[in-house]
Amino acid sequence: MKRETIEQLKNTASITVLTGAGISAESGVPTFRGDNGLWKNFKAEELATPQAFIRDPSIVWEWYDLRRRLLKNIKPNTGHFAISEIERCIKDFLLITQNVDGLHGLAGNKNIIELHGNIWRVRCVSNCGTRVNKEVPLKDIPPYCDCGSLIRPDIVWFGEMLDEADLRKAYNGIRQCDTFLVVGTSGLVQPAASFPIMAKDIGAYVIEVNIEATTITPFSDEFIRGKAGEILPLLADIIAGR
Ligand code: BV8
Ligand code: ZN
Image 1 (cartoon, rainbow, N blue to C red):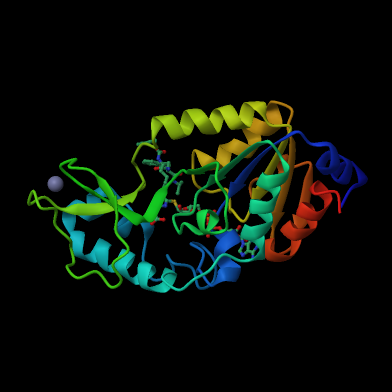
Image 2: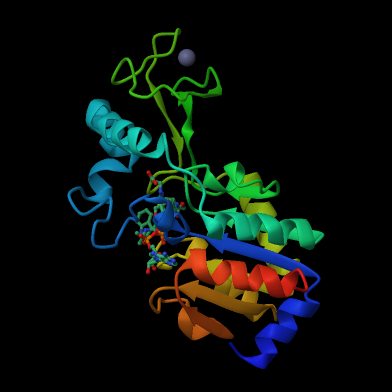
């Protein structure tokens, strides 16, 4: 790690963090595009899209039910806990996650934007409301609302707009941070993939943690090759002044 990065972490006053599936890999959650990736056997366009849900809500719910069963007993790892400690050290902190597994909340982070939603939340397609549903396995596939309409995962699918308020909050966090930490994302999904580049353009110091180089690496001030669960506790030590 460069001297400059250590100094930056020691003196930073405002940190925005962006995480992807890689931070949950060491908890046992398969990533999307890795070797045992979630999309190895399926195609995203066959499942994580509104068209797929309209065409066959059962197959989409089968996929989510499978993931929920897998996630049920999964715990945050040292990488999640390190980010939670960083939030306790830095007053001006924002965590933007693309993950839908809820592990950052379980690890104690508070100021979180779940950009792509949460697998433990569902909503009625006729807008009766959004609610937490932790039923594993799901009793009915697909589940129906009392109003008779289908219930869908409260997740942002491909081709769907992200929540306006979330996006505004994210852009705010990118604008005002002096350190942007991006962890465990392949940088393939928009608009999240552009966030580190925006932060760089605005003058933030961009640090990337990943087991391999990504589309983001050329824009980062420091690329730390390694597992999130091993690297992030080291960064938290520096920020905490240990
Ligand atoms: C939008 C929910 C405006 C599903 C997800 C054509 C038509 C319509 C839209 C588009 C289009 N072309 C492009 C788009 C935009 C599209 C997009 O970006 N497509 C891509 C694929 C080209 N984006 C959208 O549609 C977004 N909406 O743009 O709205 C709009 C609307 C209409 C028309 C135009 C524009 C919505 C995007 C949200 C999609 N939903 N998830 C679900 O999860 O069930 S995306 C999905 O990918 C997950 O959320 C995941 O988080 C995300 C990103 O993947 P990563 O997190 O990066 O995971 P990945 O496996 O790829 O990488 C893991 C990384 O970790 C790797 O780098 C690996 O090396 C690393 N790693 C592994 N182990 C470790 C590690 N690192 C550290 N430590 C380790 N131990
Ligand atoms: Zn309803």
